[in-house]
Amino acid sequence: MRPEESIFMKEYLVSKAKQTMPISARCNLRCVFCSNYSNPFPITRDVFRDLEDIKANIPLLQPFNGTINISENIPGRIAEGEALLHPKLFEILNLIRKRFRYTETIEFSTNGTTLTEEMIKKLYAYMPIRIRTISMNSSSINYWQEISVGMRKQGEIAIKAVELLGKYSIPFDGSIVAVPKITGWEGIEETIKYYVKNNVREIIIWHPGYSKLIDPRIKEKIECSFEELSKFATKMRKVYKKPINLFPDLLMPCSVNIQKIMDFMQDMGKAKVLWLVSEAAKEMLGLEIERYSPYVWNEHFVMPVKNLTYGGNIIVSGLLTVDDFIRAGKEFLKTKSDIDLVLVPKEPLDTAGQDLLYTPYYKIEEELGCQVKVV
Ligand code: SF4
Image: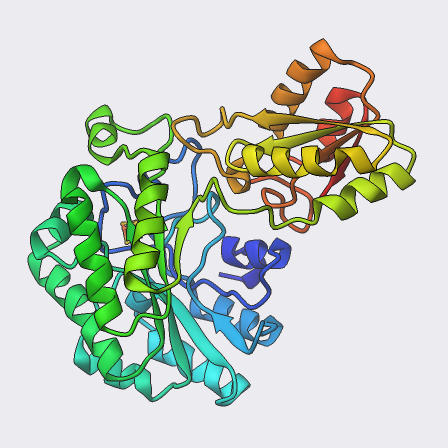
């Protein structure tokens, strides 16, 4: 395959993460919450990236903070995959090391099912390496099997891998998708404890997301309250004294500088500004805008955008589409039509200004009939 025909290369060229070169869209598990099986539109899956295409990508890589990543696909276009399954993994690592010597860290996320001691020793030759996250969702083999729907042997390897990473001092973050209906909260805590005991750097707890295509029986199993999970994460941070990051975290302070944006809109002379925001961000962003409103002369309105493309419980901004923004914007304009400017978040757009379905964001401007800015 010629590199220009490769979906991986196309994605790389419009990606914001120039340090990231995913090599796999194939996985050996079938986790109950895996988004690969309920995407509302077709995505590339079940393939390994072609070696020639990888060779073409390596010279384009721009390490970020001294790191190159070989496993993170753009969500929603290429399926999540397991990089360590790539049949030419070591050839690829050799090529990366040839280009980047031993100064840059090579990082990847993994489900851990191939991380035997022998494998870890082989990887050790390419140090510095870092496991961005090991997605070992339960330290109990029975729960692991129920969640990850893999063979017992695979689960045993993944659980043991956490210990081995500690033993070989390979830095890693631990990831857990919270499914308390399967493990109970105690089961999640046990896994946190196991990660901490083995020197994890940070832990990420994911709220299990699902789209409108989820099988109702699976939905019943994985549903989990945001509030309860948030309280649980707060408690765990205090007990285990480790950074425990929740995603999405509805209480997380805004990462964008709201004050600066509001000042800028004021300087532009925009009297009425509409913020179209994800449901995940609406609360904290709304509070921040309200807090700063007395200091600007113009008016700001916040409209949460429902993700009707994915449906289900998807509320993060990264998976919103242009259609979602148009629908929400039109809804708002029915009640207030004299808006001068609409702001949309940058997260769901690639560097070509397109959403996951390749629809350009200028369509929002065309459909709403007012200027749109990406912030
Ligand atoms: S390990 Fe990740 S990619 Fe593989 S099935 Fe589980 S969630 Fe999906």
